[in-house]
Structure formats: structure tokens, C-alpha cells
Image (cartoon, rainbow, N blue to C red; front, top):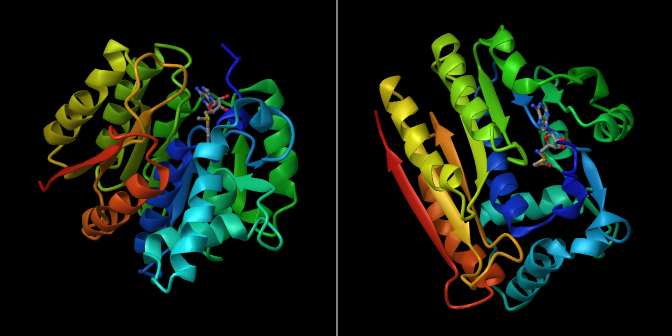
Length: 293
Ligand code: SAM
């Protein structure tokens, strides 16, 4: 159950899609001054070394953040203005590093923490016995630490208890490892319960695109749940390669319930750039679909 460590995958193409989308959601929701509660149901360790430990074994960041960093530097040097969303994402990553070198990659807890305004709150869940200790330590170093609660609990069971947030303005990132096949089923139950309690919340679900029946069915299952609750949705995928076999993750997706109206245009501009920057072969492509309730 606890073999998954996000440090192996930190800074991968999947993290880029997830974190770039997440930043736009937060920035949009912060256009109004009311307090925002953000729940990160599967937090991981918070921040990761790219220069030693697990990341150097998997080297997933080579095809992800290192590649994007080089691409954006070349892009800017050739006189092109970088897409604002990609720039905002790079700014979040650069904020954890000094100079031009990338030594650290911020996970969702650090990206979200740095974006908090004084009125906002962040709630982090992590079950892994080692990751929770690292997460607690990392969060304690942040100047936003007082605005953050860390729970060593099963978020699928606990999410509904946090909804609706007191301010009725909320964003929930659901980013399971899907290490346990049951996660797909737990996700559906958690989403049903969450929408019953807080139908107007913004929910961002990440999933891997792998040859597993549950993974292929996930977008349709989420569409069904969103539609049953009369909610708008947006579905996006980023594929960086289409090679035979599954030596490494080649594609991932995000399903957003109650997306801001700005998100589709934002991704429509950013995704072709990501395909160009991160694409490994001719099979690199993106998908973007939405439905307005
Ligand atoms: N969201 C992080 C990021 O973007 O940086 C990455 C999270 S990683 C994909 C998933 C994490 O969820 C793992 O660290 C795992 O230990 C944790 N986890 C697995 N099941 C959980 C559960 N039911 N409740 C809370 N955390 C869980």
C-alpha cells in the first residue's frame, strides 16, 4: 500500500499539467477578496530534491521540468513573450531555487502555500508514515505555516467533513497515487459526497493515463457524476509520447468540476506550447473538452 513516493515523479510532465492548471484555478478564485479554503487531499512530502535521492533514480524531471526550463529560456531569449500561465508556473518553481539552476521542485502543498493570501486556508492530507513526517517538517519551515493544517488521515473518508468551508469558497485538489486500484472507486464516492455537501466548490482531479480499465473509464465516470449534479466540467489530457509498452507514464489527465470560465482559453493556449516543449515523439498531443451546465 505504501510503496508510492512522489519524489520519484516530482517535476514530471504529469506534475507540470497538474500544477499549471492548479495555479490558474487559485489565481482565478483569488480575484474575489473572500477567504478561500483549499484542500489538497493527497499532499505528498511538499517539496522534493531534483539533485539527489529518488528523483535521480527515475529521472522523470529530465523529460519534465528540466526540459520545460530549457525551452522557456530559449523561447524568451529568441524574443518571444512566454504564455502568462507557463510563466506563472515557472515563477513558482523558480521561487524555490536560487539562480538559474533547478535543485528543488515544489509539490502541490508548497505551490499552494506560496499562493495563499492572509485570509486563505490550506488543508493537507497525507497517509504515508514517512511522507507525513517530511511534510510536517517542510510545512513548519514556511512563513504561511499558521494558515495550514496537516492531517495524517484518509482524505477520501475525511473530505466530506470539511465541506462546505466556512466561507463557502473552496478548491479541492484530488491527486491520488492510484497505487491501490480501489482509489478509483473511493474517488467516485468522495466526489458524490462532496458535491452533495458543496455543489459549488471547484474540484480538480488528476489521473494517470495507463492501460487499466479504471483509468480509461475515469473521465466518463466523473462526467456522469458532474452531470447528475448539474455541474459544468472541463477535461484535459497531455500526452508526451505514444510508444509501445508502459516503461514510464506517457500521458495524464485532469478533470475539473465547476471550472472557471477562463480555464479553457488558458489551457487552449498553454497546451500546444507544452506539447512542443515536452513532446518525445509524433504521438505527443493534448485533449481539451468542456461542458457548461
Ligand atoms: N499532490 C502531490 C503533488 O502534486 O505534489 C503529490 C501527491 S502523490 C501523487 C499522492 C500521495 O497521496 C502520496 O504521498 C500517498 O502517500 C498519499 N495518499 C495515498 N492515499 C491517501 C489517502 N487515502 N489519504 C491521504 N493521502 C493519501
